[in-house]
Amino acid sequence: MQDVKDDINSLVGTTAFRDGFDRRGFLKTALGTGFAASVLPVCAQTMIKTDTSGLTAGEVTITVNGQNVPMYRAQPEGKTNLPVVLVVSEIFGVHEHIADVARRFAKLGYLALAPDLFVRQGNAAAYPTAAEVIKEVISKVPDAQVMADLDACVAWAKDNGGNTDKVGITGFCWGGRVTWLYAAHNPKVKAGVAWYGRLVGDKTALTPTHPVDIAADLKVPVLGLYGAKDTGIPLESVDKMKEALAKGGSKSSFVIFENSGHAFHADYRPSFVEADAREGWRLCLAWFKTHGVI
Image 1: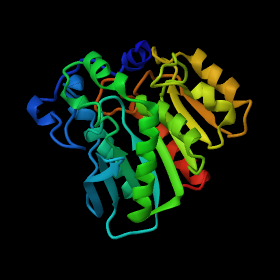
Image 2: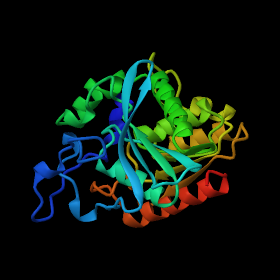
Image 3: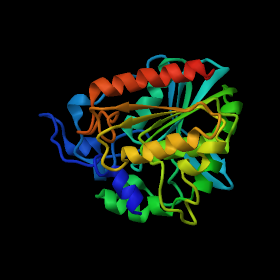
């Protein structure tokens, strides 16, 4: 539990709305819209807005072992045989920022899928504090469930215009850790990009392994984008991960942003660092291209 709390220490902060913005307008009302109550207020003036022109975008549903799992999908309208990218959210779920990231990928020719990986445990958007989100939802999510849901996303993509010979995965914070784990779970993934995901931690029945544990056997190349000032993920843990990766052959790599802390890509939070977010995005796209995702 402490591991997750450390991850979000610098993600949760206080800021103000730009004049004229109503807090109620930012509450999450459907998948891919609004924001979790625990992150409000948001930095409206720095939020990136990607439109749906030329895209098919919105919520679809997949079924996994009898459970309906909502998923935000964005893709170029009318196109098939598309490269696939899985977009894995932070602990706050598939809110407006995560959907926007999916649309950014779709504008570049991807079928982007962002599943609600917490649907069985509860609505992460409903709790007023991050501590409650962790206690009531995140701490109850098994890694095995997450891997199965992501497998189902890939299967859905295959039947709905995606080229599953070209699959990439990227994720933020909680989703960054998942990115490392899914890259190990599914060696058919071409590449992953993990944004400031935890690398080490306590082992539990629900989280029996962490990225450092799978590093030596990893086959999929993963790019880690991390902040030197991240108080929840110290550089010592990055060094441990590098040492473990050196024992294998995945050719994974790290880029450390010296001026950033945690969640520097989150343009709706005060942690956002525009220059590093832009460079991280460029590196992400280049990594996918280099390793055959697109």
